[in-house]
Length: 313
Image (cartoon, rainbow, N blue to C red):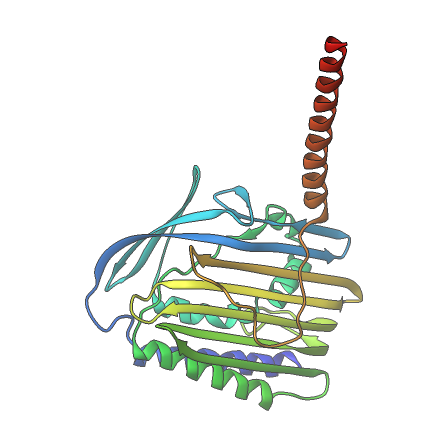
């Protein structure tokens, strides 16, 4: 697929999203409330080889600091009819963002193909050092719980699937699957895109380049929203890209997900199952630490035993 065709896809998708934004207001009623939610970053893993650079991390980052996956982030949310303001806190680190549901809608096309977009940007901009501290913290804690929201997800999935099918041709063989459903007061949206790209590919009309590539990739995205409160229960992005760009080998794997404390986040439904393994050195260090402590404890017990035996003798 050439850049002109992809520009057309992005233009059509952009127009479709803007039309949905105009039709669907952010909130259907006046809201003014605040609440605090604790999210656990259950996974934040990046393994990447891009050109000569190698990245391996199990961390996430914000406020210029790095934190291990499995740790919690306190989220203070202020909801009004103008939008959402939220402050994320982890120890002394803080970040405050503001967004509307319309802004989330515009970000959705990037989220559902985050892995290969990240790969292209890293390859072309050589900014991999920014990921040494881990995946950048990304949480949308509140989505307007209205029928227009559920309709938007359904329409987005259907239209995106149709565009992928329409533009399949030689050199660009990529599929898209999605599902949306309600279970126990929660709305689930999940999608997957993946396949093979063999030819020139550019990221869209706002970027004036295309890159010769030969890659296979897949990318998962999911979000779960409480249909009563609008609070996001959990979300995740997982994907991989392997092959070559400009005849340079690339191999990127990403697995990032967060969930509200006490919520169970299920496995992805689509695509081939794979695991982004934790950074090995971290596991080795933990094993060495506990092994050393165990051996030290056994030695101390042995010395105490023989010392007591010597005294008795």
